[in-house]
Length: 150
Ligand SMILES: [Zn+2]
Ligand SMILES: [Zn+2]
Image (cartoon, rainbow, N blue to C red; front, side, top):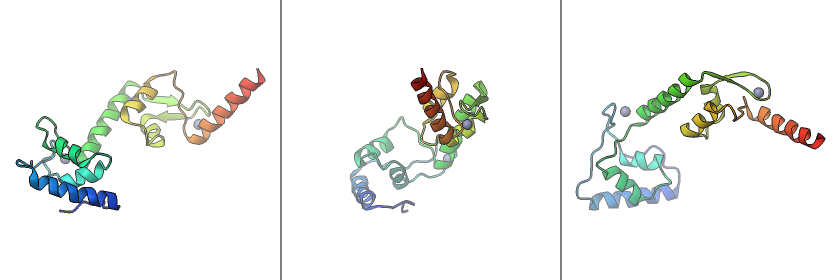
């Protein structure tokens, strides 16, 4: 019953604190994945959301209106969202080299973007997209020199 990713002392302290908090909780919930019914572990939930405080973790976990997904189902969910955006616009072109790109490639190049941000950029033809960072840099460099030349 231990989390997979104990990678630092801060997390370890949080886990200890969480364990104490759970013991004080009168109706600690047993949670299962909303979609597939797999048992969920609050320590995994904590290690996936290390930026949350222990109190906040407990609050979310005990919340009667929130439903949780296991990692697998959560990934499927995101994939589904991405698909529906791709259905609206299948391809775009790199602003610099004109290479054709699909949304899945674009999301891989921009791993840090959330689905909402990806969607906003992808569906807005005014926002240029690039096949990689190199194209982006080259493009900005050319824009810069163009501006200088004016
Ligand atoms: Zn699941
Ligand atoms: Zn390119």
